[in-house]
Length: 71
Image (tube, rainbow, N blue to C red; front, side, top):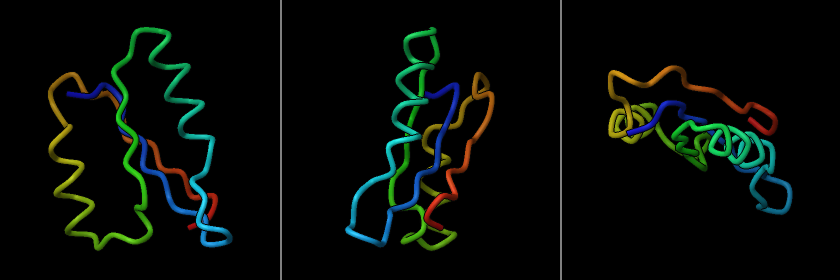
């Protein structure tokens, strides 16, 4: 389901999403990749994060990127 999966953490200051993963995702989509951004990773348990991520992994998945800016 996704060539690239990006984990995004929530900025605790102000509760805003970080823009970087969405900019990167947009650029990648424009260049032919299927991208899934998973938000609020810092608020999920490891089990929840693995369960959600597994839904999007397939043989064509190339990488999982981790945004740790606010983690």
